[in-house]
Each structure stands twice: as structure tokens, then as C-alpha cells.
Length: 142
Image (tube, rainbow, N blue to C red):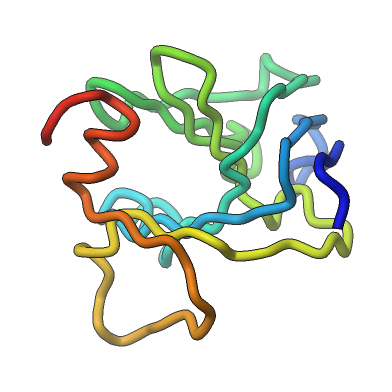
């Protein structure tokens, strides 16, 4: 597996196109209630995105889902485009948005303490609770 990747994708209607660079081909799962409500299940996203170029930005709607983060979707077709922190450069881009048959590796799960009991991923991953996520990304407790 190569150390970095350039990936491209678009929303369902094609109004928004993304090109991104990720430092690794890893995918993280977020089990927080907001992500599960947003997409109907855990968010499976590229978490090591180092750069995002967006075409069709006028078709993007941003939703401030918390004091520290926002979610983006296409205002025409509703495709989820990214989750990002309001400070810093952290983007989480849904893996399905840019998947072109890459050899993705699910290697982390966050908000593991909010994961419902009715599903389970079988591979070994690094697991962070909500408290550990807040400390790691925001430098504070929830």
C-alpha cells in the first residue's frame, strides 16, 4: 500500500467535485449520535486528509452541527461532502464519496462509547471514547 493518495469524487448530481490528498489510505468510523443521525449509520471517512480542492462550491450548504465543527452537503442532491473542524485543517471525507476501488483500511473508531450494540466491525482498530476524542482534537474534555 502506498503512503499517500490523491482521490477524486463528486456528489450524486455532479454539481460538487472534490479532489483530496490523504497521507494514508485509512478510514475511520465515527459512532457519535450526530454522525449516525446525519447518515443513518456510522460515518466511514478518510481521516488523514491533508488538502481538499472543491469545484462547485456555490452548490455547497454548510451546517454548523456544533460549536466546533460543521458538515457540508450538496444543496441539490443532498450528498454528504465532508465534516470539518471550524479551527484548523481537519477534514473527514466520506470514503464512499471518493472510492475508486482503493485498498482502504478501517483502522480507527471514535465515539466508541456511543456505538449501538446492534452492529460491530470485526477487524482490530484503535478505539477512542468521546472523552478521548475531545481531548485529542480540541484539547479539552466534553
